[in-house]
Image (cartoon, rainbow, N blue to C red; front, side, top):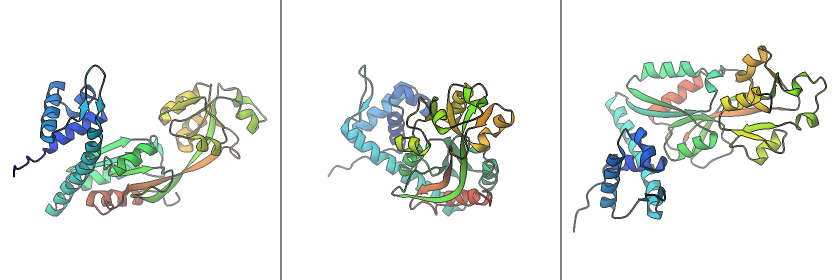
Length: 299
């Protein structure tokens, strides 16, 4: 019986990068390789597998059906391989490797959790660990955790998700704001009906149910992150929600004003999440403990 050549992990990493960036050009920077080198890697992998992974050419990049199936298996394998490498480092007693962590945007400004302090303590304790800190949306965090692209995340989990465990950290207060150039800023008698007549900016990942909970039936602008949301609100053309701590500088400067706090406000529950079965991995456990320790008691 003919022996099969074992797959090279580097080839698998190149394939995943190409799939995530939808082509060779997009994967260049992530891999630090030329397109010709990436093409050679992909051809070698396809030759070993015996099937085509993706279609590339003038029609654009697209994974084949077998490529889609193989991508899912590869992402899962690489996640398990990374976990194995971390376990080896733990056995040696000299923790190194990589920890990939995600937070929501504007987290660094929230004093309830001292994130800079957490990072300093973690780095001092594990100087050999490469910390990859990413800003992602809640849904991107869930996808990343499930596919082992992320080891740990601080985010707002919409509901119970299979294979994800969470530990509540604190609640973040959000109010509805308008800017000093908005007509509502100087309006003395505000009503819900009056406020909801104006343009409303929201996060792209909010659905209709989220809008209704926040007091609006539709939005007139969408953004990906908090900075973009702040920019649209400051334009004076939209009202929108912001975390209280993120907006307080502009409120003190009288550039933003909260609108009917008794009617428009909500608290976002921020939780510490990781994939089920990974919470006891040394680096994840250490980061979890530091995050819990550095969260204010009154959160």
